[in-house]
Image: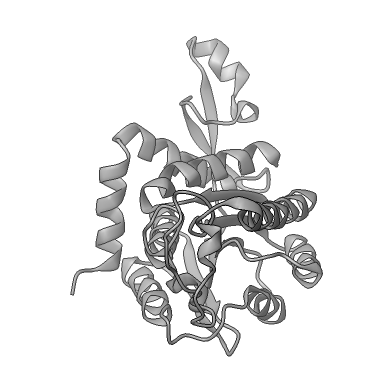
Length: 293
């Protein structure tokens, strides 16, 4: 059986050249960096470094920009939170299984955490149950996490319920973490907003949305069904007209509401339509998060 971590690393090399991977690695490293860390040494400035980390006196002495590096006092924890309900067994906007995009996103963030010596944990589940994998380090542990997600997502899984997973984290996770939430375009309601407000006070939160298949317009399939209940979807959506316009409006309103709630809580969101979108989307997510801090 091919390692899922190996698949993730292979795709990272295929979809991004070395400089892009280095910059992504640097953006991830900046997430936990704060003034509470111990000064370590100086190194040459590279694109993506924070201006506030430049040591201006040392720069003046040597004639080229130098930045301060900080050593973490202890290992950090990256908490991966994933919806593994039936929704993730559906097809994405790019035509690929949502599950493949979820695994790629979780795998890249988990692998970056591994490279930085951080520990990784997982909270996943559906409406019927939530599962926790305690924090540990190493590629073997990341492989276990990805296998859990891969095995859980399917048409025989329970209904998706991201609210249940957020509530589970709020009840059970006390240690400050970087929370990386992967979900589809499900609506974010008042209960979700309340839970996220509570969690954002304790954790750094990044939100990654896997976008749903397009069901209205020329690109929509002529015949499709809803993985949530197995019912066939209206072919009128693919034919355009008033029904399709109403559907588009509802989707846009749902996305706008989610964006407003997340922005109001200081949570940065990125989205992907396909596996190939994951790396650039994660880079933008980390960069925006760093600039927003």
